[in-house]
Image 1: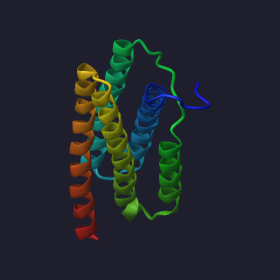
Image 2 (image 1 turned 90 degrees about the vertical axis):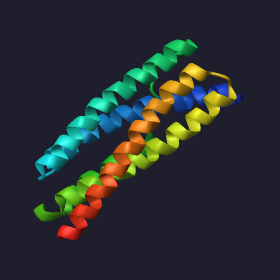
Image 3 (image 1 turned 120 degrees about the horizontal axis):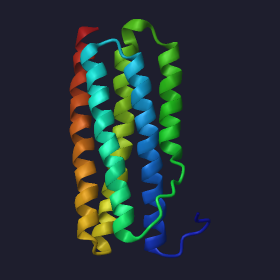
Amino acid sequence: MFEHFDTPQELFEYRLGSALSMEDDSLQMLGELESAARSPELKEMFRHHAGETRQQIENLHTVCAELGLSTDREPSQTTKGIAKESSSLLRKSADGLLDSVAVAAALGTEHYEIATYEALIAAAEGMGHPMVVNLLRANLDQEKHTSEELVAKAKQFAAAA
């Protein structure tokens, strides 16, 4: 779509397309992490966040509609890299470590998503798009909550080791 950015709007549009790809990648990764997880509670956490991720994708589509933009996706190299690394670690880890590895992988994705939404919100605020800010903030709030839950799980699994 873009080979060179000349305006903040072009950069915003590109990052919005990348956020769509990021959430698609995250949804796929959550399915893989749910399959790898051993803890029923962790499996449920991943299923729950997959539902939230679907809503986040819808919010991003609404943002695009509000701004009159296409919903073309720009590849998110970061989430693809996190997913690749998590798959590798899951293959290399003993069964007793799979929940810890899955939590760490999900946490890495959450932190990237948080940073992405914070940057998009700042740009949307600067461009004067309050409805867009509200939708992006809803996604950000869910990501922060999930991050907090994952940190608690990481501590729990580390203490049980």
